[in-house]
Image (cartoon, rainbow, N blue to C red; front, side):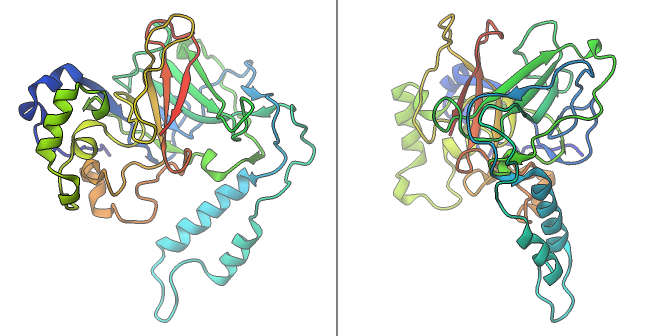
Length: 339
């Protein structure tokens, strides 16, 4: 099924023509639960990974013995999904049965991998793979590569603090002759938000406009006058930030939202160019403030459990991860921003 972003509730360029200079396209990925294959673009699906190529491993020093078992995370999700999808019989309460609750009670955090030392290699978790043929805005990376694969370490404990560790792998899909059948995954994760559910993608190209605090001051003032005093806003009041500028959810390209920290220009260390968003990894596809972006096809069930969290990925405190890369030299280091 395709996903269709509703037409924006106002023609923002008609209201503010100078925004045309601050326009950029993005491809909303619209991940939804499914059974992707190695030749599909996906989140949390199997990768087109060569049988002879070593899997990315994390060897940075940090605790890796304790957390949640990946198998427990998946079992818990399956039990809850089945339980809340059932229509309870008369006199029964909705949700898990007593037997299911007993199983859920056993799925606890703990020291599930006591054999692991602080620098023992652990498999990085496969997050996504994106084929250029499917994603119009996947313009970064080496020109001769048509596939991007994304991994992360399932612990927040890198760089001497609580930073994430993420690995990008560009490749030519035609070079993969024999695919690795058994794909490694960590035994234990720091939290369940690092375990993406297998999702197929429904890419859709949309137009975005730059984050409001990065626009010229005069334009910002005119937008604020059009929106009216914030104290007078109603739940259905249109705002530039929520309804007209940056799409929520997983996407490629477009603009980064700086709603948590305020705007920043992050430059490439080796060459000094301004880094640009390659991929946005989101905790939700929409929320109470961005409901106008909910795809038409999802609206009948938009309030259902997990409807806006199909990947079950959680970034930071239910935020979004922006992966920024150098637009000229893809081999230069990437940078991560959480908002």
